[in-house]
Length: 456
Image 1 (cartoon, rainbow, N blue to C red):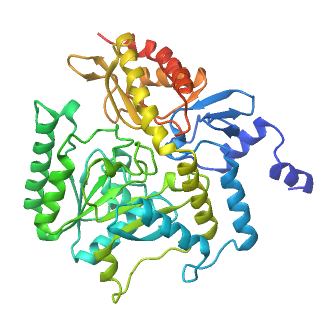
Image 2 (cartoon, rainbow, N blue to C red):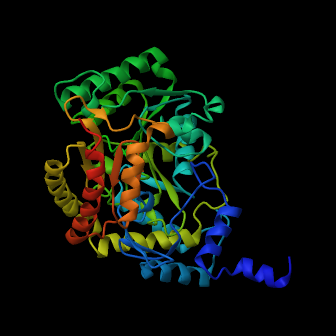
Image 3 (cartoon, helix red, strand yellow):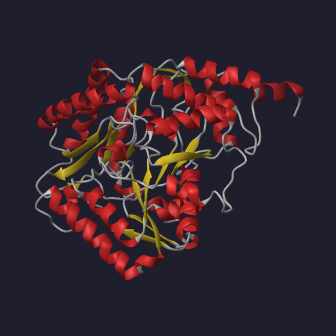
């Protein structure tokens, strides 16, 4: 290449060149690589993104449910820049002020039995290291989780999850994972007559399967603090309490995956805070730094901490406790508190629930709405009585026609949000206002007119 062409490659000057550079030189997640048409983002502020043509999009799922404080908050930028002026990186055997400050803050906001943090780079790494800790601490090997769950895309994490994205690679899955049915009351596998009955039947089914698998081989039960991309399947009352009882009975650890449901997303600091149940390990990422820089953590119970005081701890990452990431997280946590975003998530979640009830009256395609704080999903159906989904679970591309039309309309009208199978997710930044919720729901309402044409 000539010098001029190299300069052009390194300094794209127009939207088409940027698009070309991205499509020709980078791979995209969870996609066929041909025919992609990604939004070409130039900037963001609050709940909005702008593409390079100047079109504005309201971000109704906080990207991947992680930009909790909204886009473009310069308080985080300033914290990152200040840290980089001091030191940008030290190896994890050294310490920085930001590492200790963040550890102290996480101990403060998590349940009191969780007394130390191990820092990771993201959610999947948090899952991987939680698995290691559970297995080494208990001397057992099996991990029990739910079929409709997601815990990350690395091999161990995707094996623990039940999400069908793993099908293409599960011939090399991590061994010793056991999956059980969700307490999915809307489509209860046990045809329960109440949410409470579904909770007990689901938990009893889990205990039976643990019995078949040998309880003394089970290291941990892995649950999302609140269900995320599988459909925001709400835990019915009593489920977590019963799972805790099973753990205590058989000496099994309870791991709460708060990667998506943590840091105010559900109207409390963590999704599992709604359950009033002790967890032994808590994984986190996403909202810890609001996606501004990569970071994750594993919070560990005091008993596990003490075990490793005189026992070798076999975990490590080059970028564990990265000082710049820790600085970003400290600034992010301060924003949650200063701007009262956890409280706002709870308040806006109640408003959102009220408005969805009105939306249900207009659109017969809405079968169910499941939400905690600002972590919600509309499940669309062809018939409310039979609950026939608008498209099947794990629908093939050839079956996605109706939802593709819905998603295209949402984008056309200036919204980005997560659309999957027969579900539209609503998980906006926690800074959102009632007016912005109304704006977003007006777009979704227009898109649901398409879904309504497929009902009978």
